[in-house]
Amino acid sequence: MSESPTLTFKPVTTAEWDDLQALFEELGSLKGCWCMWWRQTRAETQRQFGEGNRQAMQRIIESGEVPGILAYDGGRPVGWCSIGPRESFPVLDRSPVARRVDDRPVWSIVCFMVAKAYRGQGMMTALIRAAVDYARAQGAQIVEAYPILPEESNDPRWLVFSGVRSAFERAGFVEVARRSKMRCIMRLELDRLCSHEG
Image (cartoon, rainbow, N blue to C red; front, side):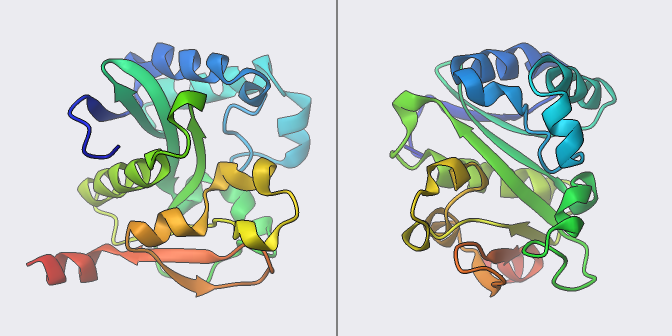
């Protein structure tokens, strides 16, 4: 899929807000979180589930912050990846599983949404690569993620929003920590990647 001539990627700004809404609306009940899970407390996310979280995401975008990347196929929004400096996701530091590995500055990939017709076709890896490209352009040196290991979970479906390890492996990420049987922390060091490419 990543080689499709019609597949493009855009950072989400106010110009893409309607497209992000269209994708989340298509995903039905999943839209209630509006990718605020790692940005605010669990109580806030649950209390604002639905319209409140939609407005919270809209405020982020209107402030000028780019909360992630949208994938388009022929102009239609078909996938989403939330990425930003780790500081954009303060709840990560409250998680015993996702707490910081060290004090190095990182960008974090925390969430994916993919239109049903595009699942199982490599869209997640394509989104990861696009997100990495965006982070690199913003000066990031390390991109970090917190995917699950589906083989270690009895029912991984509800956890897939954070990505699966195999997709990150295909994008060059390596595991750097594991504090849970079914979730790990992975990183891609961009300065090292650039030196290899050079």
